[in-house]
Amino acid sequence: MELLRKLQQRVENKNPVSIGIVGCGQMGSGLAHTINNIQGMQVNCIADINAERAITTFLELGISRGDIIETSSLDRANDALNSGKKVVTTNAMLLTGIDHIEANVEATGVPDIGARMALSSIERKKPIIMLNVETDITIGALLNYKARQNGALYTVASGDEPGVCKMLYEQAVLMGFEVVCIGKGKNNPVNFNATPESCMEEALSKDMNPKMLASFKDGTKTMVEMAAVSNATGLLPDVPGMHGLKVEFDDLLKIFKPKTDGGIFTTRGTVDFSTGKIAPGVFLIVYSSDKRIQKEMKFITHAEGPYYLLSRPYHLCDLETPQSVAEAVLLNEVTVVAETMNSEVVAIAKRDLKAGEVLKGIGSTDIYGKIYTYKEARQLIVIPVGLAENGRILKEVKRGELLTENNCRPDQSSFIYKLRQEQDKLLKL
Image (cartoon, rainbow, N blue to C red; front, side):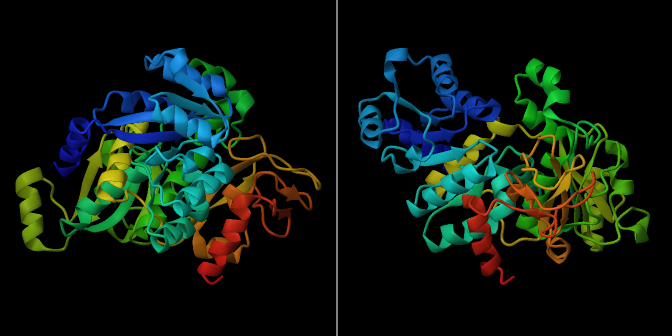
């Protein structure tokens, strides 16, 4: 395998791929441990608002405290890395300027921070690998465009569902199939009322951020992940929010296909999810009218066709992200990028909101996200979920109602809002 050969060369040359991580929560710290077990790669810098969390991660990797330098100075950071030490900083933007860092992984899940990190990395021609899909579904088309114009590399990471779904999608297309549906398993029913407070006990038991867990339970993360898949492949949600039925593995092929053939979809080429016992897996429903392919599939898989189920029973989150990092640095290849905006995740009131209130963001008590086609979302002049944080409510919004330009004003001073305006112009809105 070319990738492993190139990594082995890095080992032989004593020049491992030098990586920075932004965000040292569950995903970021897990990624650091994974990379620590891979020859030819190493984490040299971690940025987190809580410096002690980053320091603890390096200590867990066996780095002595004396070899961990905490600084916000670019010169001191460069000096530290040149002398073989590790760097911890509370200034995420520092990582894009450090000479020794070859690529950064953004793992904060905060749209505005992700926007700043991505653009700065692109401008410095330093590969940026996004575990922050929230940023990607808001301005990923612009970031991908800017990266290509600047000879840089921007990509969503492998390991999260978008990367694994894209891998299956490409395999299916390269076998001559029509992809009818791309889906994922969600490991619990959607609970639109989930809040950090209601998730606190479970989050603490799992060493998770309660806000992050709330965003999983209220469905926002699933909407975000499948919007990223949509924007990379062109497949669309069949209905706002997708169907999200509880369908078990053996019934996926019966349900996730067009109504004309006994399924649920009014269109072909959809993204969706199941709350059956599918998670942490992903799946594709594919189709072929070719009689020879049908014969081959029956011989090999015993499937009757013409619809077929392709699946992967797992996605391994940060454990798989190093592949995207290595491919970006060593092969100049992307994993998942938004070619355009096919879908939008819009903000919906999680509770009654009063005029004058300032919104908290994803996973809060205020909003949850729901996927729409991009065309419908623009017609409804909705507020993208990635722009909702710090937005101001203009007039009363009832629980379950869409946040739109008529009842909410986004924070126009935010960095991601300004980039979104630039993306809108790029897409000729």
